[in-house]
Every structure is written in structure tokens, then in C-alpha cells.
Length: 416
Ligand SMILES: *Cc1c(COP(=O)(O)O)cnc(C)c1O
Image (spheres, rainbow, N blue to C red):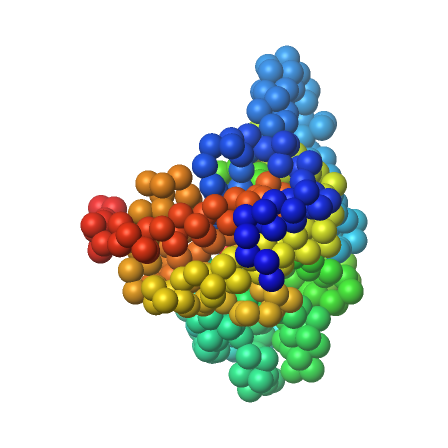
């Protein structure tokens, strides 16, 4: 692999997604490698939100509800078709990832009566583990945490050994938040189905970065974030997916009026709506949804296969440069080395990763620090160039060569 900056620039010249960079704001102000945590602002979003504020709210007032009640399903269908590989009527935008996880976890556990174990991954994102623990505690269930390698991810033999007739639901992330390790949805779904368990996928670090192909994989349940690779903005509502054939069997635990049949009949008791609407709860965040719609549309337009291919190439460059330039400074690649086994981010391990993170921020590079000693680099394929990756890695090399990071605090400041 030619590791010159000119070779990186040649990859940009040949990039079929290069034009999408101009659809985002701030792309020339520094090297942003944290699109897997909070995606950039699309150029169209302020006007789209302003239109909802000024026209639909400002002029239309309550009359605009006719278009707002469609919004959660409309954006859900857009995500289903353009991002998730699901069918119309299987995806709904609602609440937060944490709340959607809770709703679908309880619904799934209720659908497997007599089973008293929930399985999750010991290394999964905190909110996922906490919600699994909370649901288990409230129902008298047991949590079986499967160990996953911090860098290479979950071993399916380890997962298989944890599955038996006591397991109701398995909660897993398609892409591990720290290492980027990718799990095969179809393989795990088949494994879990053999034991009779449902799998609830968290697609937060995957949606917009790698294909989920939920229909092909036969996936049962999923949730995910829209403010990461989908660029829906801070606090953007999440999405949930329930396979069509399961929808009528499942009841979610928060019986709100937005999940009820004939909502405006204001009936005496809760009767769940047909289809995916029954997984809604209350009034949707209409302004935030307008931003999600823009992000979802741009992602669908770019095409998830092309995004994933570019993500693999960008992370391949990170790995190659880390091997060539940084090994002598004690940096190691803390992600799967084979591109098809990763999402669109890579972690590098270094004992002073927190100091390196601070030094990079001061030099115009935004990475992310993750415990225990990981520098996480997420070059979002919609707007990150190969030369951006090259320049960021070059600055990291310079920081290490000069020892500039050693003058930064070693402890993360505690927020009190
Ligand atoms: C980002 C992320 C979340 C975020 O959940 P919120 O409810 O939006 O705070 C949840 N799970 C995973 C795996 C994530 O990466």
C-alpha cells in the first residue's frame, strides 16, 4: 500500500461519494473523526427545521398535525428501505435508543413466557447493559453476560454456549462501540432461533456505516441511534424495528396514546394499534424529526453499500498508517484487522491515550477517548476524505515524536 499523501489524494479523486462532502457544514474547519459519536450538520438541515418552525408551526399551528402524525412512519420507511434493509411498516422513529431498547426488551421477554434469562455482552455500551440489568431486576430474571474480546469482539462459540431453553432475549450491538468489531446478524439470528430466543440488535454504531440487511438476515428486533452516522443532530430521536410477522404478538410496556388504535377516539382503555405504530408512545419531537429526515435521506441517497465500502477503505488507511508510523511509539491497533469484520471506526491503544486525545484536539483533530486506553477514530464516509485521515494520522505521529502529549493532564477531569 502506497502510504504517501498523494496516494490518499488519489483515493479521494476516485471516490464515488466525494460530492457528499459539500452537503455538510464545517468540513473545512479541522479534522473531525468523531462522526460515530455525533454526525455533522447537513447543509439542508437548518432550512428544513426552519420550514417546520415557521410554516408548519408558525402558520399551520395545530392544523399541521395531519402531516406530523405521518412523520414517524414516513422516516421509518425511509430508513427501512434506504439504510436498514427492512420492509415498509417495520421501522418507526420514536423516543431514544435507551427507551426503545427498554420497550422492545420487555416486549420480547413477555413474548417468551417461562424463560427467565436475558443475555447481553459484558463489553456492550453501558446503557444497553444497564437496561438489561434493570429489566431483569424488575422481572426477577437473571442476566447472563457473555464476554467479548475488547478488541476483536464477540466469539460466536462463546455466545452459543450461553444459549439454552432459559434464554428469552439476547441483546447485542452489530458494531462494538469501542473497537468497531462487527457481528454477523444472520449468523447470530440463526443461532438464537435454534434455542428459541429473540435477538434485539442495537444498530447505533452501524446504521449509516454498514448494511444491516434485517430482512435477509431474518432479524426480529432492533433499535438504533440517528445522531451518529445518520447525522440527525444532538438528541435526535431513535428508530426501532420489529419484524412484520412478530408485530401482532408483541406488546410494549409503555401504553401511550401514540401507540393506541384510533388515537383520537380517546377511548376508555388502551388497545394497541396494528403494525409498528403500537411501539410508539407519546407526542413525537416534531422539530428534531425534521432533522432526522434530512440525514436519513442523504444516507439513503449515498447508498449503504457504497458507504460501507468507503468506511472499510478509510479504516484500512488508519490501520496501515498506524502500523507504519506509530508502532515504535507503543501504539497498537485495537480493532479487528480484517476490514469486513469492522464498522467504520478504529481504535488505537496507547497507555497515554487520554493525553493524546487532548493534544490532538489542540491541533485541530477531533478523535474520541474510550476507556481504558483507547483513542477512537471514526472517519464517517459521507464527509471524511482520505487526506483527512492521512493528515490526522500525521499530526498524531508528530505529537508522539515530539512527546507533546506528555504535558497534558493524565486524569480525565470529573464532571461533578
Ligand atoms: C450511542 C449509543 C446509544 C445511545 O443511546 P441514547 O438513548 O441515545 O443515549 C445506545 N446504545 C449504543 C450501542 C450506542 O452506541
